[in-house]
Length: 365
Ligand code: CA
Image (cartoon, rainbow, N blue to C red; front, side, top):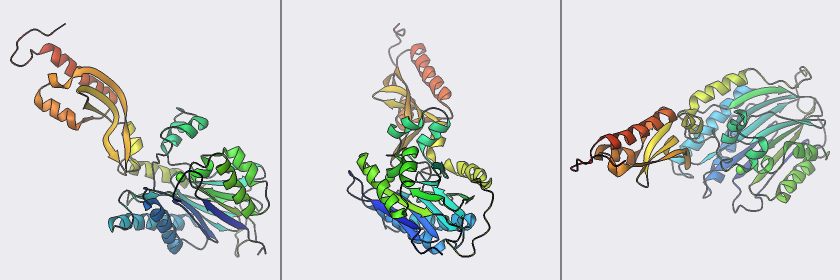
């Protein structure tokens, strides 16, 4: 066992927020960060509660499946707390957790906090963000830099606190002695590029100094959000019974993809998971008296609007029959934007074809 502490963590309110809804856990071999959502102190309750429950259920060795089970219990605890009036309905939290046994790292992850592994000067993201902008980047619609300023960058597609069946991404990584693990909330990686993070993370031998420097840099960049960084030095002898190191390359277990697939199935039902589902849906509604087509679903999920204007027509809702007009007020849901657009066209044709009620005049040109 090494004499000096080989890990450290810090959280900071940042420069613009009045509450710190981030939380962190340093309980070797367990480490975690959580970024609470919900406002009015509810996010703070959610992130702290999630870490408490995680600590109770987490394995003592790097076992990804067991760690995922602990995240699942933490999720249920956050849901129950909201139901019982602790915090608020709709509160939630991200959670990125790691258990380190020698050079093996088990990771369980939900939301847009991240785990990174630094080896020499090279940094690798171990986790994939569960966020709307991450999906857009994967689809090739926006770049990493555009995501940084995207109006919907705060929308996450998976979190603890909304869906009983939520599944965490979970996997094990074979690291090497000398590697450095970083867990961070988006207050850090939203303000600093991965290259910048790598530069700072590798510049200081002491993990605490590195964590401090990362937080200072995010604050220097404006500190628009709460900032949390946990730095863990990986060493062969850091924990007893360290298993033999595996292949030198960082390996992510194949089951990750299976977890992802299972998670996408859950997305359709979950409040935070509604974004991807919403993308495939459409509805037609009355907006300012005009028939208007939206991609997405009407209303809100966990305080988020999941619809995007597709077309505002010149078809007047008042010119349609009362039943249709009232259905439009509530929003008529359809399976695709194409169907929604053709329904709007049908209304236009209907108005042109039918005589106005009681009038009998031919339609105006
Ligand atoms: Ca945040």
